[in-house]
Amino acid sequence: MGKYQLVPVSGDGACFFHSISGFLELDKNEKKMKDGKMYTYVSRNPTKSSRLRKQVVSWLRNNLDYDMPNGLTIKDEIEEEVRYRRKLSSIKDYLQDMSRERAYAGQLEITAMANILKRSIRTFIKKGNKLSNVGLGYVIDKSINYGDIHLYHNLGKTKAKGLHHFEILYPRSYATIVPKSKYDSLERVKSKTISKPKPKPVKKRTKRRGRRP
Image (tube, rainbow, N blue to C red; front, side):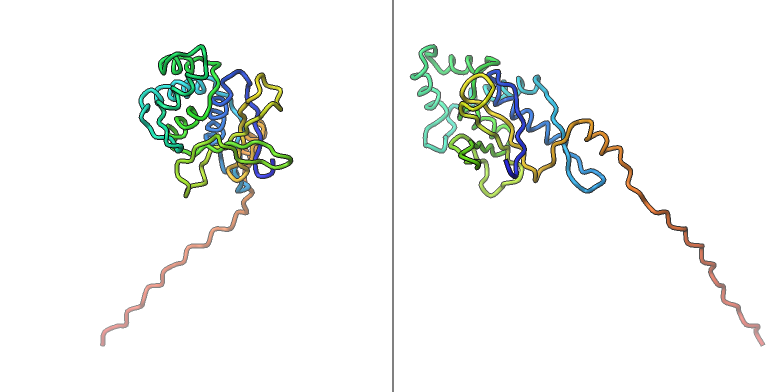
């Protein structure tokens, strides 16, 4: 993956939310160690994944008139999605379905998440030996690159259930991912310092006053 570190997540239908949650946890665990390098470790937080899903559904519900880059609104996009999915008949149905823990997220949810977190979300697929940016994703500010969330989108080449699966792509420029045990040991490392002898206090010389004639 070159400049990225791939972190697998559970393929249970909530992979997008697990990926975002996991990425945020990696950010949270970042720490500069004694060797001057940044390190982090993987920590799972299923509760946070569920909380993020609720935030996304709430944001969509409250921003139906939000303009998408393609000129359509959130409302237009959901209504088009409803037309293609027989089990859904309204915007309310769509939002209720997306509230399910195993409901798969798409471009609408990525847009909502990017706006909630105020961070661009970039999604990549693998073409040959290289990563290629795909249509999925949302850029908050093109002039800002650092802080972007990067995801890997598997297309039928994953052990996880389903043909589409999100995983974490953590930039090496952010921090190096290590096991928690190594992270803890790096925290305990004490830098070797050479003790220098304390300088002796300098006695102030007092000027001798001459006798008056």
